[in-house]
Amino acid sequence: MVCAPSAAVFAAPKKAYDLSPVQVADGLWMIEGSTEYFTSENGGAIVNCALIETGTGIVIVDTGPSRRYGEALLEVARGLNGRGVTAIVITHHHPDHFFGNQVFGATPIHALPETRALAASEGDGFADNMYRLLGDWMRGTEPVPPNADIASSLLEIGGRTFQTLPLSGHTGADLALLDQKTGTLIAGDLAFLNRAPTTPHADLDAWRAALSTLEGIDAAAILPGHGPLDRSGQSLTQTRAYLDWLEATLEDAALEGLDMVEIMASELPPEFAGMGAMPQEFHRSVAHLYPQIEREALPLGN
Ligand SMILES: [Zn+2]
Image 1 (cartoon, rainbow, N blue to C red):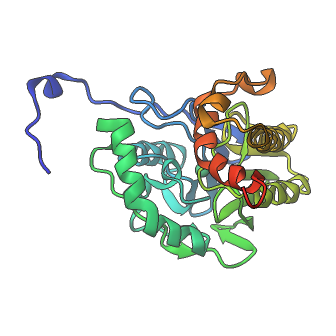
Image 2: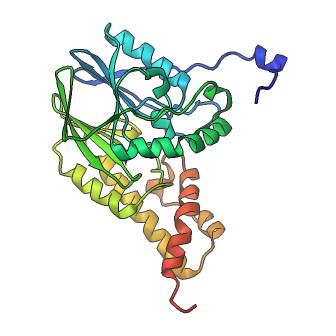
Image 3: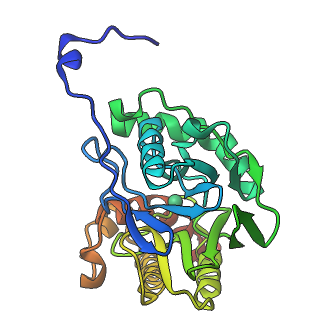
């Protein structure tokens, strides 16, 4: 559908992302997203991206929420290295992590096979939701799934080698990457820091198992999917603590016979109340996790 823009739309300044790469390791930059929920003010720039220098150009890990964000990311990459972007890696199929792909159509875009399939099957539905949440920021954005399978435990690009860790739990397929040169662990959304984890596609037991795997890695730093760089491992412990609290809270509520509105009205513990995107993420988690937990808690025969 094409709508004639109003004079007010013409008068509005074009919204632009202001992406500031911060070097966090040798040849590795982080763009740190806001810890808020999606808003028309932040344009969906709530995600962390990594840019890594190799002998053939920059590798970008996760491309952000929109075409316009992807274009801004490309400009950042060109500023860091004259050879531009040599490859993309996508950690998982959530729209804030791969909707910038369309800018990099001719570039290898690596992901786990299941992530490619999920991006293809769910991309259009995500796009509808993102247009609704973000409006003009999304103009011209079309979901482009990754185009290359990650099928081995090492990914070598331009002389730089990454260990690939095919995990799951935040979604059905979550890739973590360990940069062998610097020991930086790019954890995707398996790790959040000071920002409430999102759970719409979560399997909590699988997520905890993935956290155990990541805890077993001697990383110099962890780049979480959302939140600041982590040099102490607290993104993993905090994410686990939140998931444990969330599940226990919902199980207790089911035993008490509370409904969703009553749970959402309850007071959050101080350690989680101050996280970014609270209480919205807690409310979203109640809405999609509680029905099943409630069913499992009900005695048979009732
Ligand atoms: Zn995610």
